[in-house]
Image (cartoon, each protein chain N blue to C red):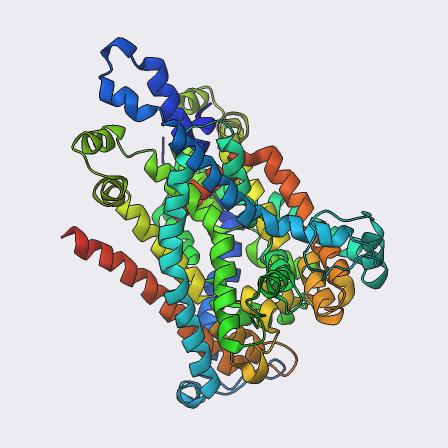
Length: 289
Length: 308
């Protein structure tokens, strides 16, 4: 097709470019710029060099948030790489009713994280279903939502529960491309189910596993809603459960928001998410070599 | 037809094998591998039911709680999933303490606007990127890819400041605007257009159709499937979003459902029946939508994940 000299390509691109530039790229540059100022919601702020970053290093809340977000990655990613794969293998075969099961397993993905969070707050409540069952069976109640550590792990469980169906669908597409002959050859050789899984399935879907690891790691590090809903806006007593993004939201919004300091925190979030992505992709390349 | 193939990869594969397979030529081992022994089938169904209880059970428990009247003990042991006397009173109750239907309407407005702007904006930009040759095309593509790499969480404070400057904080327009043309949707549409055969458009070009006519009459009708994926994910994204509306909205009359639920939970946490009714109101429309348009939801996961 001929090269357009007219304005028409730019008319087609205009709205998209404008929105993306105004609400993704400009805010990004403005975040970096603000991180070197003492701007607040209602005041412009002056250039203060790296003071925000120096403050951040001495801020105990920053380290709490970083610790919790990092723990979230460590806790959630392995489960979200392995469990959905097993689930995909379970629903892969065409047996009667399987379309229903696939759809049902996907339901938590469709629901808003707020709905999911509130459902689990009720289930894990001191007087909720799970504690009623534990108590009734003689195990005694567990303070899922009152102990700061247990709360963080409960939130991770909720994230995993909500993500299972999503990654299951990704794996399902990958599994469809594994040649059945490989499994059968292996079965003929007398390999058990576990060996077949490790020698045929895992190598065949390895690149998908890396993709899932990257996606779930980035999402886990940016966790906000689950913990916000389960621990409350301030991240529980003393903010013990605050995550990094919760801290950004607490510090930077509202009429007295410290935009400058929150921007420095945002830059840290950005750098670490990008780093996580590169780390996972690089781990993939090294294994290939 | 191609949509079905993408939505249910394993069925498509199994089907193809069954259709083109020549039973006589299939070795015995292969046949045996295809049919499951009875005990394995039983085990599979047991596992499926266990996972079903785990994934759908919590929703049912919430629904059950929302249908239990004040006379029924929701904390009792052993618990009962089926309400003794089901009542819709909690739905009226939640509407009395928060304007839940107004919140739902706000959510609907935001979601509908998000669908329209994303479909239109992404289709237009995607078409230009896929089908027009012009100086700066590569640069435009890079801009969209870069925008996709910036996580919303790391720019939301700056977006909040921008919205204040535009005096759009605490408006529904402010909720919609930042995500109204998603970079990923643009790239999805670009790939869809790029996958179409050139010849038809070439013929139209020779016949004197201009870019707009080729776009509307020829290209757009051919990418309906991808457009549906964009529409559904735009709807779901806006309806389910929590963090950005939480930041930009402060006035209760502007709340969307997710923000309203958060408020309900924060203020009336003790009344589990009402909170349950609220969550059911928020989740039911999407479950219905999902039940009707399943294949597009599944297709969106595959395409979004690979490109993202």
